[in-house]
Image (cartoon, rainbow, N blue to C red; front, side, top):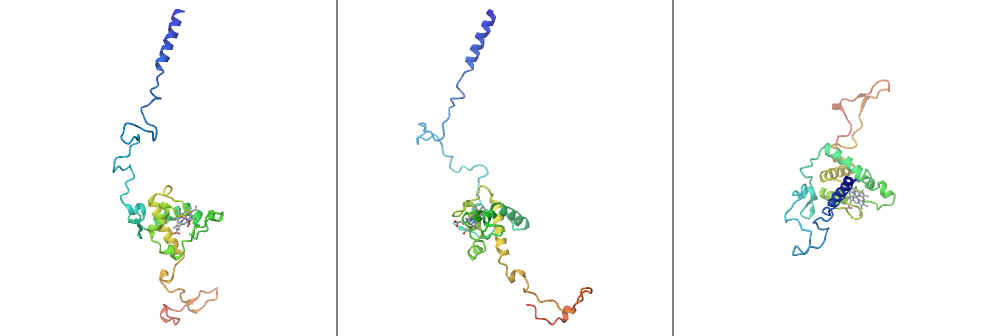
Length: 215
Ligand code: HEC
């Protein structure tokens, strides 16, 4: 009986010794709390001048802003070459992030404005056809009027791919004769024998064609 009592005491002592407040009273400051340790009375210290967080060294300003000085530039950065792969990825990203408002065609008739959101302008107008590439990058990076920015959702290299795709979209809706590389419409072919449907047509040999001169 006496030994049982001794054990109870021992247990109590152990429990009491375990009760310390160290973890609760940490020597730290709450966010923005005042401190009389520093001359400016702020506990939060600004980072040492020139500090760059890992992955945030944006030395290549054109790649990250689309601007030369304060003006948008009109070329693709070397990191994003314009090729079929870039355009395919640009189209994919565009259809995810931009088409809900701008539509897949870029005419501004996406599903969201059809349901009441502000109508975006069509990309197929002179002003935006002439807008430099960096301008589109900047709109995605910083937003424009009612349009929110997409900097958090789309990394810079994909923003450039979307830029390339928008330019391709614009060309697709504004192609002229010069883009086709030949006279449009071309002359209709001439036949020596038109064929009956059962027999194939026999075309006039190219050398003896009399039709209008090819332009
Ligand atoms: C939530 C709808 C919405 C989405 C998504 C959206 N936009 Fe827009 N965008 C707008 C609206 C609305 C305007 C017109 C804003 C205004 O004039 O206030 C606009 C305007 C623009 C303009 C024209 C700026 C000018 O000079 O007139 C460009 C370029 C543009 N958006 C590009 C994009 C790109 C690229 C994406 C995809 C990354 C995108 N937008 C996604 C709604 C959207």
